Length: 126
Image (cartoon, rainbow, N blue to C red; front, side, top):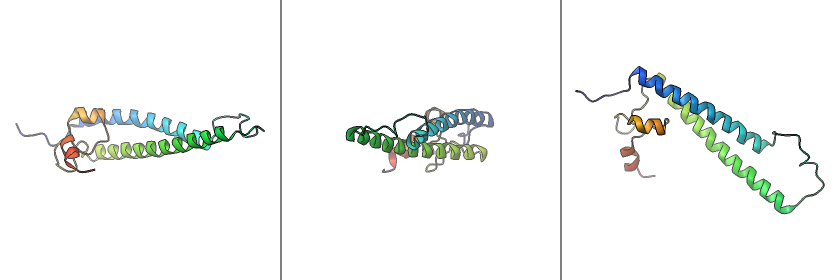
């Protein structure tokens, strides 16, 4: 039996559903992080309070910076998932970009936006 060179349409559809679910959750997480950074989640009195404590302000700034970094990572994750959907449409999804062989289904279920097999990833210096 010849080695499989691509996933079947049924398998691609299964991956597509998984990616769409992850994309939906990632977008919700991104919106939450973005609202934390932009401080749009409520009508509190925090910005009008006459009491300013340096330590609390510092912690709030650090928290916003961390939320900003997390939002950037989440946006990058969303972009990777969207690129995976394009690969599904092109029927190139699941093919290692270095070896040209199929990435194992187990790896794609765990990391649906993967473009490298474990072997290629371990072989490439990062």
